[in-house]
Image (tube, one colour):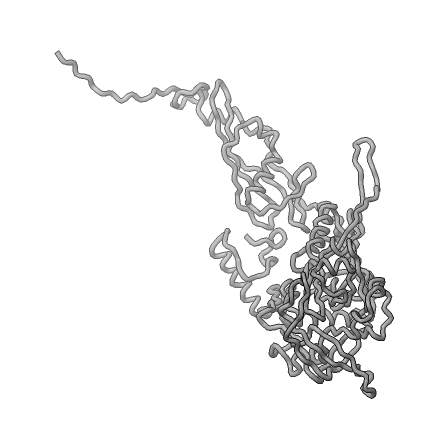
Length: 535
């Protein structure tokens, strides 16, 4: 005998809500969701309106207890910051979901939609969705307060160089601009022998000191002064000072090396010419074309000074020049420069053309000089050299003349210069009339030395037409390929009429496409919003 079993679909039974009598599925509270929500509000205790502080100057939000952080609109960082403002009430419920509700950027409102759950009435779990309104209040942060005050600083860097020429400072200024190391400064003050950088925190000053150590040969000393203290909380307020000293050697200086240092650099001659100063001092021996690099630590262990200052440069005329093909090298000699050519020249001072007195010397400028050219150099034969290392040298090893660089017509070079450099915004005091001449010397060095140009941002000057790489006299110029376009869309790069057309087109696309469309090629302040932010 077989039994027939019929498949039956069992469905859960329904009960009536004890409040309103509506059939519902059984639950621990025996109450429908509508009645349960009317009796219990799980969002009670969570504030529906919260204020949040925002600094307009630096575009940062305040995160208690004392931190300011950078957050973009509708970002995860900003959402986490908003949730931390109501962290204590949210700890009593279970947060399921959170997200932003779109608001106008200029409305000073942030709306966050929250989904929470909580156990109520005999184990029943209730879920509720609500919106928390955050009011953005403007408040200036402490760093911006110090920037506006201009006199309140925590650390200062005093950069000094004991030389008569500022070529190293002009080069250092361009490096600071290129890598943006001036952005955290409160102010920059220029004095007669250096620069002062003021900072709102010691960490920014230490970062600047590390940058200086990587870019120029220098040494520094740090000190601090106690301003105030709180004996109850054991807190102290210090002002820190960093004294940075750059080596007193500039480009085109003639130096006399100590005997031990010259021997360690490959038995090179003691009389050398500094061809450039970057992270190290680059020297060349004009008699053998031997080159060597002296870093900061080596210099301070074996210090040496410049024999002549730039004002002692004299103009010579080349009477005869011959190239030296065979260079005799001694035992243990160092590297030879491939960019220079050794030459033997007879020169005569332009101020002594009525005499027949000529000077013979060797020079590293053999590839540039021809009979009749003008060249700048130092007359060591008729100069009073007050140097301990020179006084101990044999007079036969001291050259009569050391040639530094070829001379060109400065007026023509300035007129044909179709590029420019940016400068640091700094306070100046006790300006010397010789500063302009020194700055022109630095610009000429940029045109002549490609190695220095690689570390400098050079901008094209649209007011001067583009010429050839060299002029009629053969003076070097910077090619157009090495220049950057100094473009300012917000000012007048596309023209006032064209810019207004771009702004109108972008605004129209924003209205047509709805929120979330990114506007291109217009000023950030056109569409309003916090600090000109475009959404």
